[in-house]
Image 1 (cartoon, helix red, strand yellow):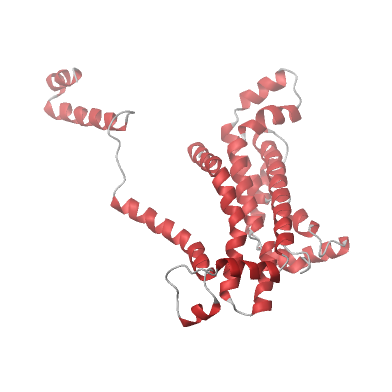
Image 2 (cartoon, rainbow, N blue to C red; image 1 turned 120 degrees about the horizontal axis):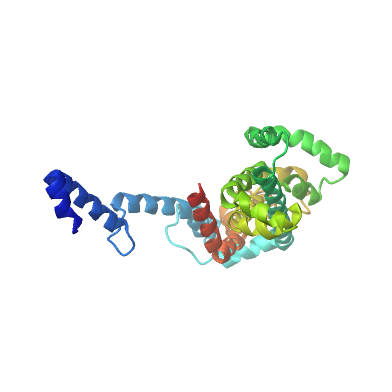
Length: 304
């Protein structure tokens, strides 16, 4: 504040008022100052997003707690007491526990392989200099524009030639690495890992694989955690390809839930009770790893 009178004497009252406003705004943004708070529109928008995200799960639970006779009379507004009976019908109708084990196995292996291979490829694209690296990265990114449905027929032929149709290998192997994972890890490591650090490790005698293991992999941990969670959820909820290639006696959870409609036609109370049961493992996963997910997203946003 002592500089304001001096500015007023040398540059006039207008310059002094402008300097005082700038000083006030810096103080509000500084730690311990009065930070700008979001308004009602921000809170209203966030509340609408939260309600829109939670509504499908709440609706599934609400319908799953009633029987078909109540649902046929109208839309229920409060939960009923028939959820356990509907859950028992789900367990009796489909191989739920086998499908649950298959989904856990497929999602875990796929998430682990995607993180490993995507981090390796991202480290190579971000920190290694080799001929054609930019063109190869552009080609990898361009594959994201190709619809999945276009590759179903040739992929099914390949799986049939290998004798993997009906096996979980047919679901795991095509998803061991993704173009999005490679692009995501390349962008993250390009900003998060200084070239000087790689050079210092190399001067100390480490090989490139050791540099990746001891320097690159720890630096990629936040982005890798987020990629693992997104890949796990995407694999868990994937229905299209497993429905085509898996045998109904060896399904994943989405394929097994589809069997409920065949056995009970359109008994939505049982179908949605099964959908709620299949969502519980994902909710537990987010409860355990949600903090790591938020940390990864925030660090990625700061780096970007």
